[in-house]
Image (tube, rainbow, N blue to C red):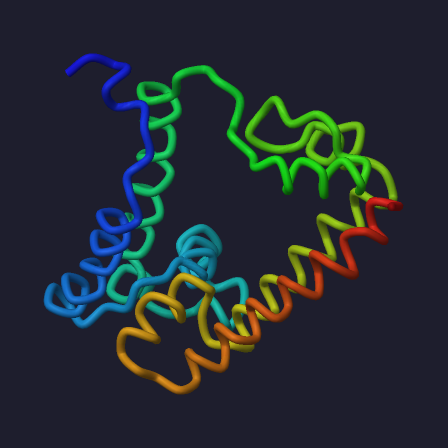
Length: 189
């Protein structure tokens, strides 16, 4: 197959069911739930055994598969970037470009906006606040909700769990609030 033949997005009706198939496969293989937020805890338990009570458990039996899953995500992303990238800028809709320009983000040539994601920007007070504040809120939110967006939205909703529905509504509501009210103030728009 020529390289140009693989340079298109999969349609939603193919990609969606393929993602959805992970739920029954994980349940059949070992009664596992899809999600990645617990992988950080497993990695800390593997790297720092006995340092804190929260990390004192047998991560091999409860989290080894999860760490392998996350490693597969990273390797898959690297292989995709290396072999399936056509070198073209990331496609962003005209409406999104206009919204980002209104926030002062104009360089849309890479995967992420250069004005926000570079060392000079991250080493400012605003950059550190965004990095630490966002990391804390995401980590606290995933811990408080008992899982991450992918775990609740894919596994939890497929399992028809009311707490997952509440968590997903909260995740999306928080994302809308951050997008429309918090991010413009952080970017100084």
